[in-house]
Image (cartoon, rainbow, N blue to C red; front, side):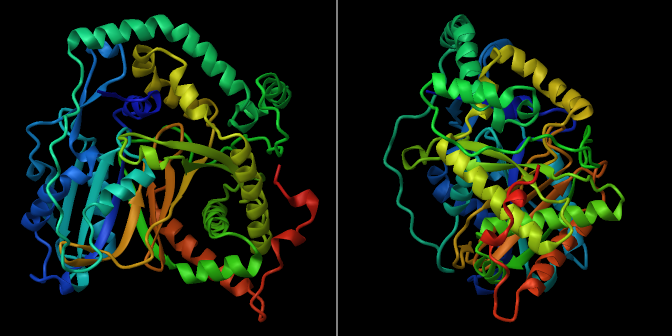
Length: 499
């Protein structure tokens, strides 16, 4: 028996007429090396039937508690037919990148059917150069970034020749409790909810200075420090900047439509900039995002005079929880230096800021996201989440956007014999997290970006992708003839963390 965690359930409750809470990926395939010289729907269905047992998230569906009195349970679908989850479409000529992005955005807008396992795959034929695309989406209540990559990996091979996968040994099915068991569990959790709320409040009090909005409240830092001391978590931790998001065009209520753009940057260039500056690859990625956002906002005369605030998901999945369906994530909330004009200074400040955020996270992992989800009874969160998100986007958005960087394999992979040329991830837009989301995945020598937006907030999403590539060119031009930027440690102390 597996019940959704409070955080998993929150992704369900966030869905509304304008929000679809699934994560997805767009794989670009070259079928030239496959036996048939093509990737067909029949081949993909056959592969899924052979390997679906390797991906638990694809076999389970929701079993809901009456009247949403408690969080749903996972139960194995005994009638699963993967063919019903696999679709195929062919683009009209010429089948270029813009057409593919438009088709993918339309598919991404549609919510998944909660009456069956929460995933779909769409094989997209007709791309230029004989390429094929595979768009796959899974509900965020079932996977996070890392488990999503592992789910995809179950279908991939190291050579064009598919590997032989052994039949699984019989195991007990995951089942939900009956109606009486569900109601008994709901009653028990309702009785314990006041104690659960107090516990969550205590845990969150130690992290007030890491939470957007809360960190700006008078006395928040003092309360957090005192609570950590009382609870025995009083180790010396680096001080974080105030996390108050400025107003931008990205923030406000979103609509139901989506726009998508994608592109790749050579990972070798990113590593070269990182080595030359003493920063990390992730610092460079964050700087690229800050630079692109700055350029886009400047074009519209909407650039705030202080840094944007980004939420950066962090995987906390352990080896023992590798096959657990659901989310094992936390989040770092950090300023990104969109207010700085100099690209070198932008990189240095970003590296300093991320170093401080990582030190703080290592000393006191931010668990407030899960605790916040646990504070109210399930029935209340089911009714109120989407409304609260929409009100927050109007009154005081906690962050400007989400930026995510998922590490992937640095070797070529194959699907149905076709080589995977690139994999562009896509995530979730909500009222509270902003109308643009930037996600990247490192694969086989490239950083593959996927940018998702609401056209009510960012209509020209390809322009933002262009700014990312321009930002990479800008950083490469900053490398001195000796192959070095000024090292991160040369930054004056007063500029270590933007306020």
